[in-house]
Image (cartoon, rainbow, N blue to C red):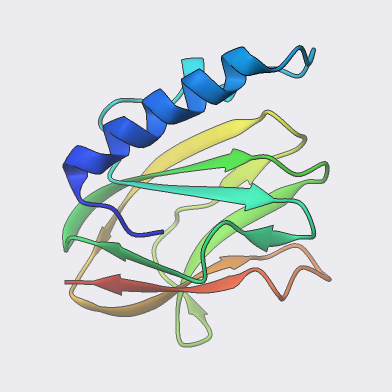
Length: 128
């Protein structure tokens, strides 16, 4: 899912509203999502990302990953088949959240889960 900066705050508000509807005892990641996140990526059930493509502005990006799945995921950014930078976001269980900063030049990248068997978690990231 690609969002302009103003929309990411709407997503956080939406997550908060949806979380208040359920009676689940799962931890709520909406309280930990930083307001300055440039790109939010969620791992969802069936071992996949919440979107097949994302967009972000070039430069220093704060990327966040939330886990809505029941298994561990590790997000890395690839250019071709090569890991870019040292960003590695790890979420171990449902409800976990992690964020980090990476600097990307304009171009096409991949958001990838490096856990063996999770190769289907491979989405396009267009940076402009």
